[in-house]
Image 1 (cartoon, rainbow, N blue to C red):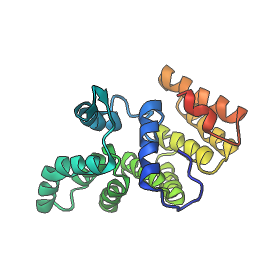
Image 2: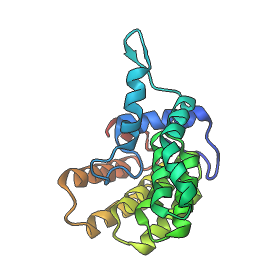
Image 3: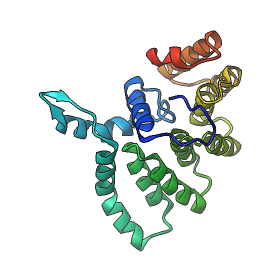
Length: 218
């Protein structure tokens, strides 16, 4: 999931590989603190089961996933024609595209939702995640900074801030600072989630120059 340059565009293959890694590792940006919601898995499972070769499940292509997202978003887009300024509806469409790894489309709908209702921290965090996966590191960090201005204790924002600092900026010290702030400001954090953040802190402290070693741990 490493991005080598801020603002650089990933190839289709890179985005696809990143999405698969996130699915396997369960440490995708924005998903650690979303409870039972797992959009990547939910969106991918039916297609994975359907696309098989000699009984072996195969991941759908990005083109196929785009088709699935367009079909799923169809009814929502129809509603949007009669209610184009509905921020909740725009965010829901964004989630539909994000769940199919169509990160640019998702970010566009999240942006439209935030233009109408800018105080939606959860939506802004989702947009930051999508921007990160398209290669727009600066844009992602900008959105997280805004989220933390609106909600300084927000666990998702602080978690994602640490992930991007470490993986995209190779700033292990900054990542650890964000995660320690997360734990400090959220003392009642669920034990399993707290343990995962602590493991990230330990990994970043031991391997400040790279995030590759953590990919097999989560």
